[in-house]
Image (cartoon, rainbow, N blue to C red):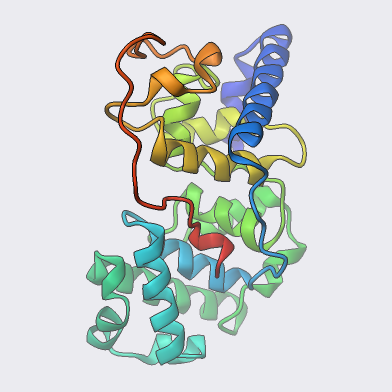
Length: 258
């Protein structure tokens, strides 16, 4: 993962300190607005988290949670998942969507893990550095930087800041990761900016904020607590029309409920 620090290295020390201070202000404002997120006191095994995160790709957390719960109910052991037919596995996870692709990725990851570690268990990675874990996990088919970073944060308790599409959008609009056109590049840029001990809070609150207020289209700029920090060219004036509130509960987070 030698490219992980490139975006930070392009900033001058003064600019980096400014972005670090701004990131802290954003984290504190989100905590004031949304609270400090609940964190699961029980850290699930890394393989459980890996599979749950694969299921969460391109769907909402409630659907992926139903898929994960159904999968574990049908196959309590990962060896059972590995031995299941592709058709049976697709049925078990269908509520997560993209069942054919996700079943293939899960089966491929399990086979690679068994070959590498001799068992369906990722416990050996606990002793490794975060960079090494990122590299090893992203070598698995269907596992990108975000998925690997979620394993680090939610299972291993590492102070790593995963970047999904919501987080990427907010970091871009807030000017925290200028010039970063993909979530992977934003992940690189943010590694040196997130305040120590706040990766979980900032990640979770940015996702919630992106779901409910700073949406891809029609963001609620008129009632945004981050308005003063926002550099987004398309933001509406404070006295402009405010988007209507969303009625659905969008606070549920799969990875704190594995």
